[in-house]
Image (cartoon, rainbow, N blue to C red; front, side, top):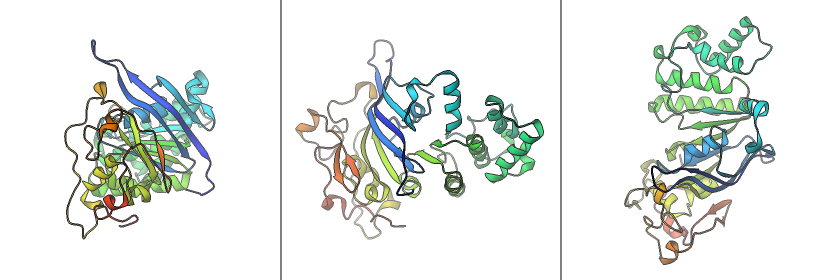
Length: 337
């Protein structure tokens, strides 16, 4: 990411509330979330299942409408976009889904799936030109042009995900939102797909929002990382700062539980989380993490901690953030392989 990169996406006080079942309480899947994404940046979003990561992705992609708050793309309020303007937005913000089996229509060929973008958004391409354009996209993502007329069941999982990537970049988007794009792939194939995404980002000037539960993948891919817990962003920091000196106890516990992120000479002690993630329909009061936090005190159950600058580009919402002494010795140093 260039040091002179401009602000492309602005999210302010974003809320998405779903009605509860029966007489149950409403679920605030995304709750008062604010952040920015710079042009050309890769912003990672990590957290356990149920944190609100996918809901946040769908809000930014306008697959869901927010309950309140604001999302701006290049200064435009996406909540006010309708009709033809919304159709144009689809060419600028594209989604890459995590399940390469469910995300492709089994009744259409790979070429038709990729070329559908040109049908929905008519262009000057003729039938022959469109086929050549689709085949060029297939070549760009590492597929053979001869795969044009094959159906999804004839491809491996990795090849299917490449079809999804080709479809996502077909219209030359500014933003690609990748929601767990390698979670269902074998490790060797994960590396290939991640390398492909990095190459396409450089080649096309993409801004990437990368959602994952895999902290090691996030460290490899992302310039900055946002950590979500029960609909809240609890920490947002440059990747090296986050992995080298996490300030929120939740972030520290997540990193500490991943062997690949630990120092080779540490003593094996881990700050393991206890209990299950509470239901978003009945989230704990004040700091939502206090019921599982090893540093929780009375104040944590009474007053919600505001996001605060912790230095080095790190913002964390915690009354009692980790000290350097608490982080050192448990986590691998920033920049380690």
